[in-house]
Image (cartoon, rainbow, N blue to C red; front, side):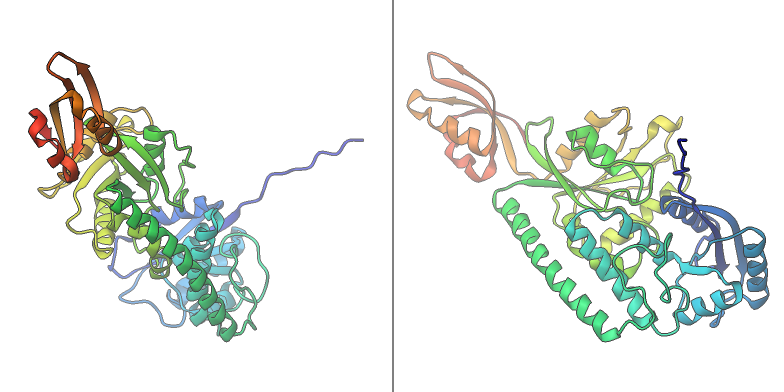
Length: 424
């Protein structure tokens, strides 16, 4: 007799807890925390919020409210408690002692998501470094978190999981991983320098997590990058070349998404990846125009970009997902910015976006009509290598050429130009 098995994976039932001290918008942060839990394949069941002037040193939340949480966990079969702030090892231990439920904080949740989404060797190295750095000062005093090999939210990834883990061993592991990551960073830096030397123009696609960056890259280049309606669906950078309307080629670089209160250890671990934005010629800032918090999300992205040293780089602000709304909010832009309304999903506005990118790129090329003598026909090959030939026609006077020429070699063609269509 055939037996059917239920392959449905039971999701962790999660209680979300927050202490509202007035430091940030707790309600909006909890909405984001819910999305993070869903991304980690958890099921948000209950929210508990307490207003306090400051966090309780022993339990983060007040003792009375903690007793209430313990009862809610029992009544609703809660598997995980997740706090929307960073907890100390002592706070975690005390909360677990009262509630008897595995407890993690926002940072541990984000690290867990990164651990499950990291696919490349570099991505896994970055996540493990961040996890170990986060856990190192919390080894002493952590209860359920380190006393067992768990399953589910907050336990994934290559980090150490036993209470008796030696701190010296973890420090050695961090040092080893950091050295390995440094070698990868060297190769990435060499590639970056090679692109600069070869005059390759680069555009970094940046923005809040789940704003549609990977969807945009796929729409423009058919890159086949994983694109899901989840936070941090993409962690690794992907580069693809594309031709702009003015004829220039540019390399688009997809980057990891940002989020409010992004853990410091993650910023440090992913620094080499995020530096792609700091080295780009233009930033394409993707904003989810359908999100009510789009202005706040854009502000978070701008702040992180500034911390990464991206000030002064031209920015094209792209309001994505316009197919979901009747109108889009317009952000207050700086004078050097360009704003475009698009839908990466339907393709609406992509041509206007590429035109804005072309206008934002540095003045590096000249588009000209040339009349080359027949004995200078060899110069055509130079144009094809370092520029682009749009058309050529052989006439009695010579070869008429419509071409895009790099400014570095334009002196070779100065005497043959008929007129310049525009400077790029």
